[in-house]
Length: 543
Ligand SMILES: CC/C=C\C/C=C/C(=O)SCCNC(=O)CCNC(=O)[C@H](O)C(C)(C)COP(=O)(O)OP(=O)(O)OC[C@H]1O[C@@H](n2cnc3c(N)ncnc32)[C@H](O)[C@@H]1OP(=O)(O)O
Image (cartoon, rainbow, N blue to C red):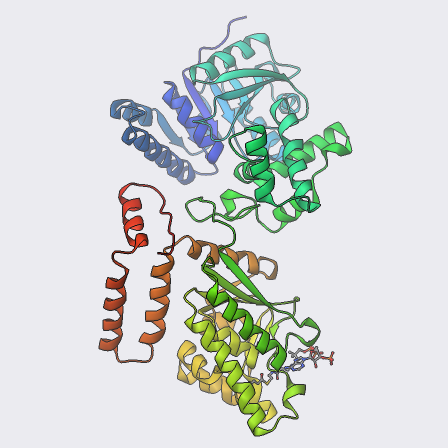
């Protein structure tokens, strides 16, 4: 039987995998039509690939001429309808069986009869995909590894219906793209994921059962077994949603409980912590995809949930002690303050305790709260409030003493002290006025009104609001991002921003100039600028 000669390759899906496949196919000399849900996405991905090629030129791995010719071979298209002249289409959409079946039927309808159709699926039955087409003999699996341009393997998966000529042609195409081919029959997980996914899940079971930390598990695997990355790092790179989808296919199709997904994996995916692409999985990543070192972000939890974390002398005193300890910790780069339970950050100073206080006792209590506020404001590291519920009275005041506030959508803020015949006593009146303006602060303090998260966002009391289950994760991401920056610079920015509030602008500007100059000559200033010029991420040490 005659087989088609491959000149034009269609790639469906312009995400990480599809873009990688388009890049290696174009580099191999094929004309590549790249499609996604719309032309805009395909065009964006094509530009990104061109930029990647540019980087290879800078690194001396590709000539400028070759990069230009490769980029010219990449054509973004509006959709599947543009695949009519393609000799081979490689589908690289999300790992979802219903979606892939739909896309396969649509590709089949749009493509010329003798063209070949491949799926980059990592687990879905290729036989099932072939069966929805009118060309089942011309269908097979072409499973590239991530990142496609760097990974040498392509796993070719033969559907039951795949004709030998289809296999041979695709194998040659994969080899032309610089890949080594292994061949698998159509079975759940094929060859690579049949081995890999249970291994990744086993590492997750070990975390779930408390056998070891993610760091120890990854280090143990790397140094003991010699793969380039640990199983949890790899799971984060693949995407935890993808790992879960494949684990579910293995479990459902093979029917053996040894393939079940760990609850921990399911929960991380439910939380939206899908790994590197989402900024958080087993590890936290900054916007450049760099892993943020653990231990740089601390969390204080106000922990008296049966009283909605109401602040009595014991709790405020403990807070004072812990903050003094944090001040001595040279490793911390950001601090989060939040409340225990799902109802309150802190519903105020403890009314029962205050109800019997004399004037001097109230003064001492107020001064303790002020001392805590001052500690938070003058720490060298940023303090972020993650307000997970009620932040009333003293609770709102504690949040205001933090550098900035993020809140859950069900958070409530207010200074309701006037209802009790008193006024804020932990710095709330003046900090609230500085945060939201004197008029709004007056209204809140005079009426005792309690406002919701949306209103708090609108008036600038909080910087962002998030679904309750996402709040802490989002705040940790922000703290983790700060932890990657120059600690001395962050500390100076915090100091100048705070002190600048209380002095005339010329004095504030003078403070800024002094702080700016003081940073020069520090290791971090030299490192930050050298890293930029060297086109590499900076590694700040806080000196
Ligand atoms: C020197 C002075 C220093 C600083 C000045 C600061 C002053 C203040 O902060 S004054 C307090 C301001 N806060 C308030 O007025 C809020 C009081 N709380 C409430 O209005 C409600 O609890 C709520 C609307 C926040 C929630 O209502 P609900 O969902 O119905 O919960 P409960 O009321 O049943 O609360 C559960 C539990 O927590 C106790 N609790 C709540 N807030 C406080 C508080 N501020 N002080 C002491 N205890 C508090 C509440 O009594 C319940 O306890 P029991 O289950 O034992 O009854």
